[in-house]
Length: 446
Image (cartoon, rainbow, N blue to C red; front, side, top):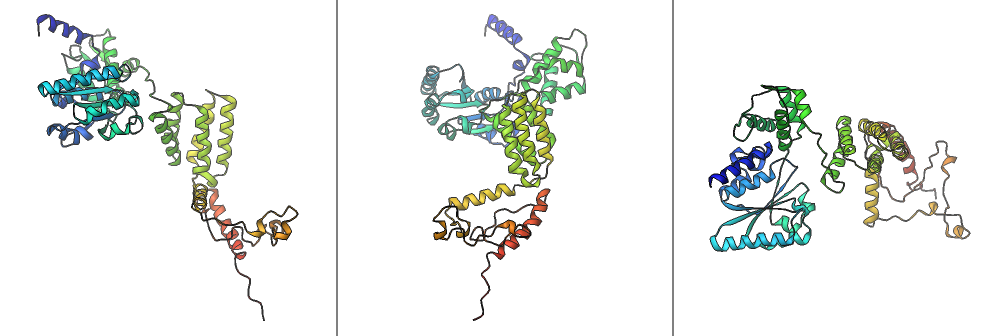
C-alpha cells in the first residue's frame, strides 16, 4: 500500500461511526453467539475442518451477522463478495457468480458470497443461486431478520445450515463498551471518560441486545460532551440514546411472535408480561381490531366457563375499540388483558368442541333420536317424530331423564377452577339424571 493509499484508508476509517470501527478483526474478538461459535461448537468445527458450506444467519439487527460473514471469509481464505437483496438484481448476482466460477477454475480460490436481507430476493432470484451453491462454486452466507423456513425457498434452506443469532446479553454489551473506551486506535481511548456503573447498566439494558445501538449511544455521549474529563453519567446515557424504532412487520415474524407471546403470557396468568407484549404491539402500530379479536377468542378458548364474565368483558372491549379508537382504547385493551391474565383458566369448552368435531369428521356419526326430531309439520306424526319427547320444564328441576344423543359420550369435562367448579358439581347431577333415560325399562311380570 502506498503512502497516499494508507492516508486515504486512515481518513475513511476516521469517518466511520464507532460501531463500524470496532468491528472485530478476528474470530477471537467476536462477542456473542457462543452457542454455535464457541470452542467445540458446530460453526467453529466446520471452520477448523475446512468444511464450511453455505449457511443462513437468522436473527435481529446488531447481533453481528455481517461482521461474522467477513470473519468467515478471512478464516476460510475466501474472497469476500457482498450483495444486498434490496438493491441488487439477477444481473448483479450472475456477475458475482460468474466471477466466482472463473476464480475457482483459474486459481482454486474460493468465494464467500454474503447476501444481506436475503429474504428480499424473490423466488427466481433465489433459484439463480441454487446451482452454484450445490456445486460449491460459492460459499453462500445469507443474512435475514425473518424466519428462513417461511421467508426463503425451501430448496435453498435445505442446502444450507441455519444459525440463529441471539440478541447480545447485557454483559456482552458491557464488554464491547469497555473495549471501545479502552481502544485508542479504533475506539475512544484518546478521550478521558469516567463511565458510571449505572450509565453502563442503562446502555446495556436499553440497547436490547443490539451492539450497534449501544456503541452509537456511547459515541454520541462522548463526542457531544465538552467537559474534560468526560463524566458519563446515567443522565448523559439517557440523552444519548435514540428511541429505537420497534422492528415490526404485520406479515412477518415480529407480528406472529409478539401475539404468541401475548396469548401465552395471558394463558400463563402473568399480567405483567402480557401488558408488556400488548404495549410493544401497540407501539409498533398493530391493528387494534386484530388485538381485540384475539382478546375475544382468548376469553372463550382459555378462560371459558371458569369465568363466564370474561367473554362479556372481551366483547365490550372490542366494541369500545371500535367506538373510541386509539390512543384511548389502549386503556380498554389493557383492562381486558390484565383481567384475562388474572382470571381462572379452563379450556374444557375448547377441548369439548375439538373432540366432538373430530368424531364428526372421522365418521362417528349419530342419527338424531326420533323423539328429538322436528315434529312441526303435518307428516311428522306418521313418521313418529317427536314421540316420547319430555318437555324439560315439566320436571321439578327442569331436567328430564331422556337420551339426547343416543350413545354415551362425554365431551365437556369442567375443571375444578373458578365458576366451572360449580358447573362440574351441577353436571354430575345432570348426567346422573340423563343416564336414567338411557337405561332399558325394567322387565314386566309375565
